[in-house]
Length: 330
Image (cartoon, rainbow, N blue to C red; front, side):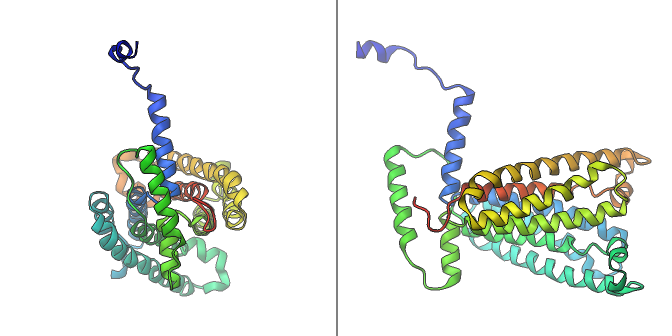
């Protein structure tokens, strides 16, 4: 009977079963800090979004100063470094973190120049609300720092497994992971690097998501204030920002919030980013000339890719909900 059964054709797994198996493997990799390629893709995506927005916003100022080109110039090398990290681990370890540090520094320098630009407007910070709306977007360069943070995290993570391991190999990997986690690095940077690489950085991811949620929400408030909130839907990114930020901070303090509340807040934030992207595309299409006059309309109209930064925040929240806490067991 056994030999006869072996001759029968085996049932091929359905699409749903294959997807479920892939999800399980991805979840295991996330919990073990094996998502270097995924984080590199997030870095490339955020670099394209931020670089385009910097190009459009600085075009409004006619690139009056040379440093206004720096976030645009940094976009191609950042994207190329992130894509190289997909195929070469050495690029992920060395090239991408180096470029990410430059992006991080450029975001901080841009924040200084934007603040100085607001100060030089009539009334300076005394007319803060008016000059924040009319002047250079003060929170936009800080959002550029997200690229640097994501790239640095990608350089610390381990690479994903291309094929699911067997049960025995999975047990060996878990044992090796537990032994590596018990080793006590001497310095704080080494401890942080070890926590990130082994998927024990839940508090850190949650706080990063909370910080960038506040920055993205503040930038959305300023940009939508320019449009006088003429549509109720323009308030949605402002409404979702406090729950997302509170969920991130709460997840850093309590694991139950990280497992139950943070995924919901992250999902709402991610969907709101997609909604805003669709509405911004629609707004540009309705301007005179539509997409045929894209260069002008993308500069003077709604920032087309800005809402997608909320998608990056949502993805960071999902990652924080899936990875382990430092003191968790394997």
